[in-house]
Length: 231
Ligand code: 6PG
Image (cartoon, rainbow, N blue to C red; front, side):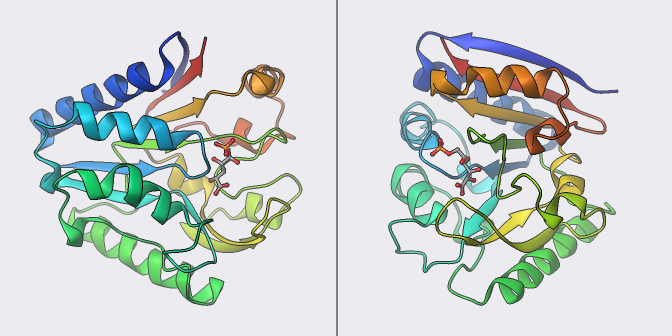
């Protein structure tokens, strides 16, 4: 059974960071590890910086980091989602290098996708799962209702077997690697981070179940969906 909630946050960055921190602390208490999927784009940057500040007491070495999507650029490129997360969060906490699973955007897209797929499948098998299951997967949405790099009218929307695929999107840079809906929806908890008030109409449409919008297909099979929206 899945359920969804929308929380309006007057202090968006600090309240979103606290929400994420609470989930991490709870997960570590319950399972001793925590699988955190990071969103890309620009919205999460300030949230990640805040998370690094307030998360000083977290045993970050037991947190496994993945990326919901990546642009096909080198990791030091201005458009790299890894670079954004590295500068705001990962460089400012005591994360263990082997637990930060970067999508290698410097490779050809299909090679990077297959490498990431293998990595996640290995981690899932190690833990006796058929599909890698995030404890918390963070996502953004675009004005067109895309999420990760799952854009409207894309063949990527119909991938129901693989966890990670190469895709091309209208948002530059076009060549990308993205998690698919089967992997996204396997998460225990999914959290959309949305700050731009201009996205409220698309949030409303998504929550009304308009399946023409990719983010409306984010429906955790056995988990919770939370919208963290700036008030
Ligand atoms: C990407 C992101 C994408 C992003 C949304 C929102 O790589 O571009 O994964 O899905 O989350 O486009 O982006 P902003 O936070 O910049 O509005």
